[in-house]
Amino acid sequence: MFGTLANYLTSVGRCAEACSGQSLSTFLSLRDVHVQNDKLHVAQPEKMVERYLDAPLDEVFGAHLKVLYNLAQSPPNYMEAYTQQAACCSAVVRLLQMLKDENWCLPVMYRVCLDLRYLAQACEKHGRSFTPGQILEKAADCMMACFRVCAADGRASEEETKRLGMMNLVNQLFKIYFRINKLHLCKPLIRAIDNCAFKDTFPLPEQITYKYFVGRRAMFDSNYRMAVEDLSFAFTHCPDRFGSNKRLILIYLVPVKMLLGYLPSKALLQHHDLLLFHDLAQALKAGNVNKFDEIVRDNEQVLIRSGIYLLVEKLKFIVYRNLFKKVFAIRQTHQLDLGDFMTALQFVGVTDVSLDETHCIIANLIYEGKIKGYISYAHNKLVVSKQNPFPPLISV
Image (cartoon, rainbow, N blue to C red; front, side):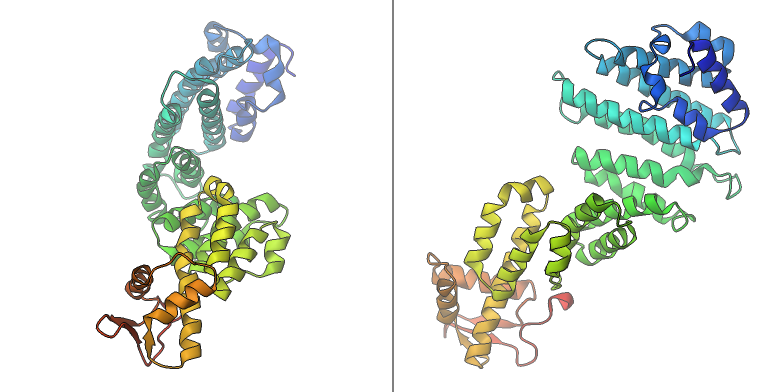
């Protein structure tokens, strides 16, 4: 493709004159076929680039050609390629600042930032001389420079404002912050989108990705209702052809909804190969603590890799609640002997539980609002409310 460097730069120049950001982004993509053209693998392309392109576009493509050169080495020099991609991103910031009332270059920004993240990940994978997450955090700093330019563009018309590029960048930054476990850095980005007049008019794929990450963050903050709302939006609007993405959303949506008392259908879980949650739901519904523990133990590594192990562990108190609700249903009294609850735990296979541990479990359930009542230690009784002693989980 292009044959020579001169042909490549001529094509770039034509796209720039036509203000075709989409075409320019293709010429900067590390997934485009031009990456394989060895005529473009130039160590010092500055003079040639300056003959064809004006500043700061010459810096953008000069840095891009150096990225291609470093990736073509054997083995690839990922660290230097990343450094040049960061320089390319900085040049894009200057391009955005120069084009004051235009936003046609947003696809260029998207592409450069995406490839910057990919190269940062490659450095993290192949490099051993720096702290994990260090390069990705630096890449996020470069992207934030682009974000600040976009967020500050309040003068242009709605059609030409660079603020239309905010959500794409926020999603890129989310992917980094979740990967390096710095979720607190998401908060100002969420605030910026919430205050943006275009938050409901961004492209639907961007909104789906945004809601997925915001929902996950709400989940980690124990804001389960908001997590359900955002993750449900992502799942409902994600097209069926993206089955792996829908499955990924469900991995977080299902346990959060279970915490609020909604059990998933077997058909849905079977369709997305997530029958693990069906087994958990059956144990939860039956109040079978031992079976629940067994399923969690057998799938421990899967749950840890998915980042939901602690969330699933929280479901255990609902298992206790459902078991103790059965005790109440059998005894049909509002003054329940605490020994009955220990017997119920032993009946479902928790043979090593003591009466003190049973007291502790019930006290936690009362504190969390899953049981309405109090413990009378003098009489060794649980005294439950005469009105709705086991309130629906959605109301807790």
